[in-house]
Amino acid sequence: MEDSFSRRAFLGALSAGSLVPGLASAQTYPLERVPVISRELWPWMRSQLLIDPGTAWFDTARFGPTLRAVVSRAFRSTERQSTDFPRYFAATFGPDAIGAPLAAIGEYLGADPGEIVLTGGTGDGLALVAQGLDLQAGDEVLTTTHDHDSAVYPWLVQAKRRGIKVVQLPQNGIPAAPEAIVGRFAGALNPKTKVVAFAHVQYTDGTVMPVREICALARSNGVFSLVDGAQAAGLQDFALRDLGCDAYATGFHKWLNGPAGSGALFVRRDAQSRVWPSAADGPVGWDTTDRFGAALPATDAPATAQARLGHLARYRGPAYDALPIAFEFQQTVNRARIGARVRELVQYLRLQVGRLPGVEILTPTHPSLWTGIVALRVAGRDHGAMAQSMLQEDGIVVGRVQHGTVFDALRVSLHASNETAEIDRLVTALQRRI
Image (cartoon, rainbow, N blue to C red; front, side, top):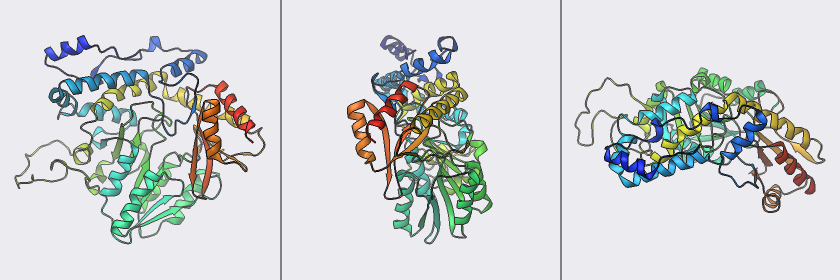
């Protein structure tokens, strides 16, 4: 299944004067080589990942083990990049070539390629928006106490720099229904609110936020909506064009098992003029003249988000060369089937953990509010110490999330490649420590 690009083939490509990257390569996971029966499919899926065989990996919310074929493709792409950079660069990020990764991402995420910016990950995209919006002293950004540091601190920097105000909306208890979450946001909006920034899936407790409803609320109040999709791509089946957000940042190294250092920022076409580039090496996409005052050539091509905001992506060719393999893998296995498998595993975990005294599940039970992340609170125990001891003594990797005194829990991330036997190992390890 792994990339079969050989040195001989590479030298042949050189002699032919072509360094076409893997975006145009043959299918890596043909359907006839993918198991159909579930009891064979999920072990096969795990075998495609680079992970220690003895490790029970329950921390995909932090990092997903990378597909072997992705690592292979990225390595071969790095070889091509190093051996003949000029032609590699032209074949990857040239005016015609840049459309390939944008199209691949747009197709997977359900967006126009002209609304996609290549980034190094979710944090890069969130920071681009925070730095790029023209906010004035006194303007307010509404976020939550459950949002990730990399989603909140870019706004806190702007608060120091520009005098804006960051309002972190508290979450009291476990959300009971989507309407209750939307009501919290509605009650916190005021005439000074200019941005609503929140997670599609909260990394703390796994709550799946009602994105469409919150974005509709923001739009009806003239408020810019920014969604942190770090935990959604590869876990949730959605199309960006249906969410109604102004901007959406995500990464591909978690639930998609894609290359580290790959991500994307979506900026709705009618919102792109509101976001200034925070890095630029030319005027294309945001100005009409160059640095010497010469007018740029007229063009009928529509402006793109990549041209305006994507100047920092040009050395990430190997990651974007390998990324379509991760998309292909998910589509071939079937996104809906992966989602169903994840929910099956979560229900099994809930059932087993529910029998343990002193362990509380902090993730919502409403059907639309949970996915592959389950947060656990163990009464009277140090969650950090528990996570560390399970890693060292049991080969079990779980996350620990702590937000001051607001939230403290063990976080179990279940992907389709996990097995019920691993969940049993986890429950046994928890039982020994309570």
